[in-house]
Amino acid sequence: MDLSVRSYRTFEDLYQYCYRVASVVGLCSLHIFGFQKEEAKKLAEQLGVAFQLTNILRDLRQDAAAGRVYLPLEDLERFHYSPDELAAGVYNRAFLALMRFESDRARGYYERAFPLIEMVEPESRPALWTLISIYRGILGVIEQNIENAGERSRESSRGNVFSRPAALSDMEKITLVLRAAGMRLRHRAGGRPDWRVRG
Image (cartoon, rainbow, N blue to C red; front, side, top):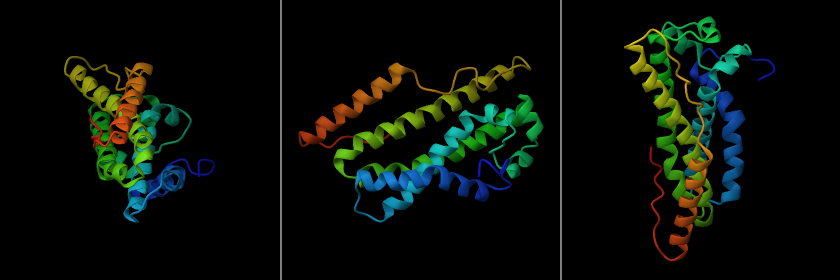
């Protein structure tokens, strides 16, 4: 699809792409993690969509510069923001509104997929929790950049949603891994870890 498709008209079209590029990987991983409930498959599919939507928002400018627009064209039209403006890096209120809409959609997929953590085998939960926490953290950086840019826009016509790279620092990642290790130890000791993903 990346070789032949440069844009997607609707979210349903984009969903198919997200399914093929990310959800299928999630479904394969689910069998490695181990699970019992069939419901876990649908949640793994939705988690893959959440991951890929995060990737799309993270790489928005680079993809647009390469001639690819992954955000649904119907969304750009809804917020009166054009693919040409995206490629040129035009920053305005329409762009901020579009970004908030897309980040809210990605957040919704994470929230629906969270119960998956407790559906996989206990030994696999720390790894899945860490993956979700890292990707959800990246979305959190994107959301913070959006809000910071919105605040700056009240004072100046200039702004940059991506003023901070949309990535977690090495220290943030290490902290998540250590938290996951602590929850694994708590489980092995007979405790009940809190697998909720914060942020």
